[in-house]
Image (cartoon, rainbow over all chains, first blue to last red; front, top):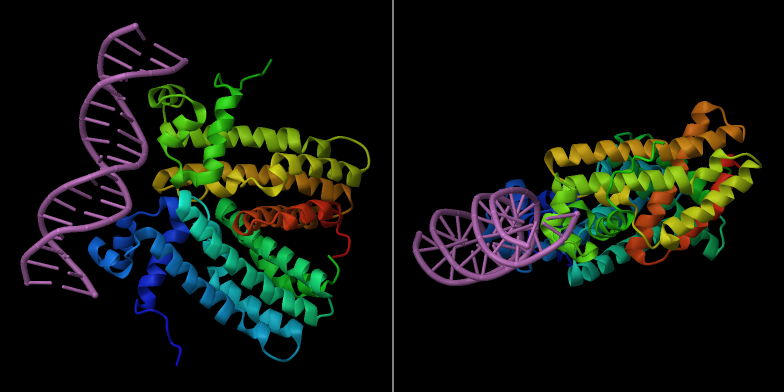
Length: 192
Length: 192
DNA sequence: GTCTATAATATGATAGAC
DNA sequence: GTCTATCATATTATAGAC
C-alpha cells in the first residue's frame, strides 16, 4: 500500500517533462508549461508551490521511477543476463523514442542557477547512481569483479548519454541504436 | 594571410563561452555576460549586433577552431597513430579542464527556441562532423574500412560527450579520464 | 482545483552622449 | 568603442473570485 505517487496525474508530469527535454531548465518557461499542460499559471502553482524547481524535481523523480523502476526492470529478473540486457535495451529504445528524446538528466542539469542548480544536480546525481548501479549489477553477474563492473556501468551510461547528445546535435540516431545493440558486450566485457 | 578571426578579442569570447558552458543557451543572460566580460550591454551589442544568438555562434566557431584546429592537431601529423591519439587525448583533458567543463555543443543545443535553435543546431552539427571526422581518419589509418572507421569515431565522441554529462551530473570525472585512456583502443578497435 | 486579473521583476534590446 | 539611461516585453509569482 505504498502507492504514494503524489496526487498529480501522470499526464501533467509527462507534459512538463516534454518541455524540459526540449528547452532545458533555463529555457523552460511558465508559458510553455501552460501550453503543454492546458493548465493556467495559478493551477500549476497550486500543484507545484515551488514553481519551476518543484516541477523539475517532480519530473526527475517520475523519470527515475520510469527508467530504473520499469525500463530497466528486466535487469533485475532471472534468466540469461545477455538476454535480459537485450530486453532492457529494447525498452530504452522506446523510452528515448529511438534516440530522438533528450535525456532529462542532461537537459535539467543545464541552465539552472544558484541553489536551484545544486538541488537539481543532487537529484540528477542520485538518478545517475541508480542507472549505473543497475548496469553494474548485471556486469557483475557476467563475471566482472566489483570495481570493473562499476566501470563498465559508467562507460555504458556515458556512451548512451553521449549518443543522445549526438542525436540532438546531428539529427542521427545511429550511434544511440548501435550503443543499445552493443550493450550486452559492453557490460559483458566482450571485444570491441 | 587569412587571419580573419573577426576583431573581437579572444578573452571576450572565452568569457562568453564560460557563461554558455555553465548556463546553457536558454539560461545565459545579458547580465551574466556583462559580469563575465566587464562590458556593458550596449558594448556587447556593438560587438554582437545579433545579441545572444550572435554570441553563441561566435563562441561555437571559436570552440571549433580550438578543438578541431588545435587540440586534435596531433591526429593530422605523422608518426605512430596510437601515440598521436595519446597526445590529442592529453590536449583534450586540458581543453575540458580534466572533465570539469561542460561541452559547448551540449550546453548550446539545450534551451534555444524557434529559429535560434535551428541556427545553433546547424553549427553544432558541423562541429560534431569535424570532431567525428578527425577521429574516423585515424581509425582508418589504424586499419578500419571507411564505414567502420566512422562508427568508431562516432562511438568515441559519444562516450566522451556522455562522460562529460556524467561528470556534470555526478561530480566524478573518472569516466571522462578513462575514456581518454581508452581512446587508442576505441579508435583502433582493440578489445573492450 | 481552476480561473481572470495583476503585480513585481528580469530580460533583451536601443537611443544618444562621450 | 564604451557608456548612462531607458524601453518594451517576457517571466515568475500571487490575490482573490468561482
